[in-house]
Length: 323
Image 1 (cartoon, one colour):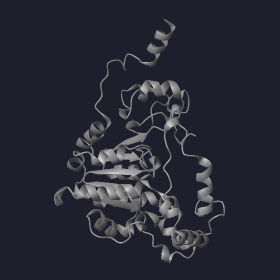
Image 2 (cartoon, helix red, strand yellow; image 1 turned 135 degrees about the horizontal axis):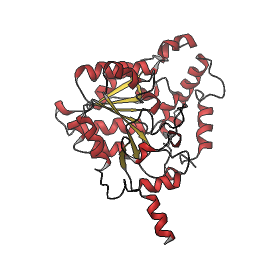
Image 3 (cartoon, helix red, strand yellow; image 1 turned 120 degrees about the horizontal axis):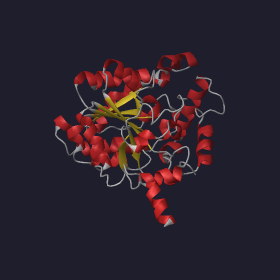
Image 4 (cartoon, helix red, strand yellow; image 1 turned 180 degrees about the horizontal axis):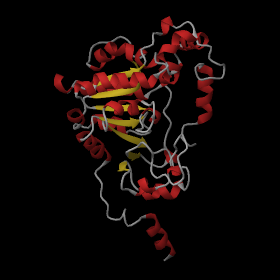
């Protein structure tokens, strides 16, 4: 009887018998009422890649806007994803304002996947990838002042999405760190866009673990992957302190502020960190350029602008998000 009672506690009446569409169907349905679905990135599982492989995706989505992409190199990215023979595409994600992008395997695979999917599509349905990081030209950066005009990343994201998506009545999947995406984010990209285009975005946060009582709450989430809308759900009724928010909210605040839905891809203790790109790690010329950039902008010796500091951080972090 004690075991039965414990099991009942894990499932509230609101959960019992509730059947939701699969996660991909739920996310694609959000495009029926929103021009933008904005999801935290990079993915901790395979959800995004599986979504792009889904034959329903090109019929719902025109563009994928990404954080690790230099907007100055948009023509190069367009040519690559359209299938043109591009000799070197890695500069698109290596030459952003964020040095960690240069070691990403997620974006390298994402761009290649879109290129391949596009080979199966007519011109009118081909997916465009939008590079939204500021259009810095690192060859011209010789001092901190040279980088200064490119530090407002949210302004760049908002500008790209406004001009390339919203003004053209297109639909876009946005893949960025959640700090750029929340409705209540102040100067964050989505918050800026929604001042002019109210309700344009549907924001999805990835599960990275609850801040308390994680094991019990994960059991309540159940199978994965699943996308749980926050309004009207038990997740939305949780105290905000259970979510990994990055600022304080008044006592009694409920749900995940600024977020519409929660993507569960499995227990936080089993989620893998994104592996480093061996191509980038072994590219001596690229590492030398990163050191030049770090010197030019007077980066502190222990900052991740220096590849050695970045590698040390990754080495000590392990392969699991919470390992």
